[in-house]
Amino acid sequence: MRLKKSLLLLPFAILITIVSCSHQSGHFWEGSSEAEKRNDSIASLFDPQLAQQKAIKLDTFFQKLHKNYGFNGAVLVSQYGKIIYKKAFGYSNYFTKTALQAQTHFQLASVSKQFTAVAVMQLKEKGLLNYDDPVKKYIPNFPYDSVITVRSLLTHRSGLPNYAYALDKYYNKKLPLNNQMVVDLFAKFKPGIDYRPNAKFAYNNTNYLYLAAIVEKLTGQNFRQYVKENIFEPAEMAHSFIYDPAHPEQLKTAAIGYLPRRGAPAVAGFDHLDGVTGDKGIYSTVEDMHHWDMALNQEKLVKRSTLEEAFTPQHREPKVLPKNYGFGWRLTQLENGEWLTYHTGWWHGFKNYYLHNPKDNSAIIILGNMAGHSLAKVNIVQSILYPEKASIFMKGEPLPQEFTQGGN
Image 1 (cartoon, rainbow, N blue to C red):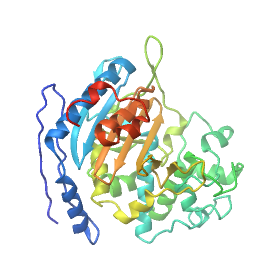
Image 2: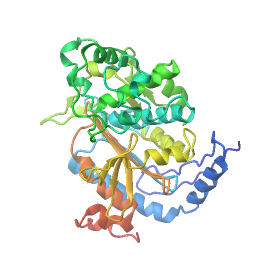
Image 3: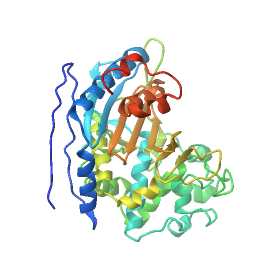
Image 4: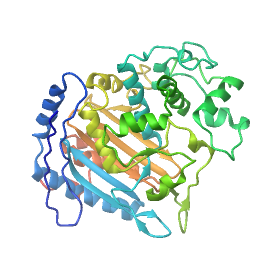
């Protein structure tokens, strides 16, 4: 299959890196030419002049966010499949003053869940499972009712308790847990469920731990290895991995996670939960996350129709409806009826935001290693990327003057 690449370098006088995305077409599905045509059509909408104007505004915003609100992290923003802004701010190691870079590894925290969801989608496409199969079909010692299905886990409707608390008194916190240990502890002690299964939405890490365990059962592979071979490699995420406590050398190029403290930030240490996969644990870079974003758009991992179901709101309760959940993605409905597809993550000082917009192959990728409140202002980034929707994102709050000038 023919590989197409185009590279457009945007001039930018204030020394920020703005490099267009190489547009690659490589698909594993029948009808891939349709995806290729779609992506080429979207790429043709790219306007270098408008992209440069947005890049200048993005840099103004992130410089202020770093200076005034303590943002410490790396950023990549793309539109129409092209990178329009990429830059890092602050330190990977606060005490050695090692600067962050676009190639620095960050713990993705709960942004990892979408990778687990895609692994399950891949097995569904291969006919190895169905979303409405009971968990017990794949995990024989699962101690709960068969009404809890794969779909219940994907959509956080299982009612299962959070393993971090429900099993707290049953394991040695001096040793790292792993998925099989948690599955066996659930089978042995059967902690009470939180609510009637499938009755409501309640975000819970246990769901995605079990999904990773199902992937392991069906493939015979360790979840880390499965993701490496079936997601990272085809998506060309050469610098991404799932952390293994038995191999701390993996973190030699990773940022350290910090908690803000008066005087100096405190290192957010590791603990016994860091051996569990599926709910967290992936380390990646903003550049690799861009590869992930494009791999989804190019159908390198699963079909577009499969993703469309994952991006469909799965909850109908009025309380949940406007802020919903799909399969591994959070969904928020805007006032104009459009849905935002994104996820956040927070773990050991890392705070992240990833917006995936398949309508125009755009993304906002913000990875931070200083747990603070700076990401509360992500609506300004959204407004810069989509100025025509600024009033919706800002919800009556005026956009600062420096972001309303420049022809956007």
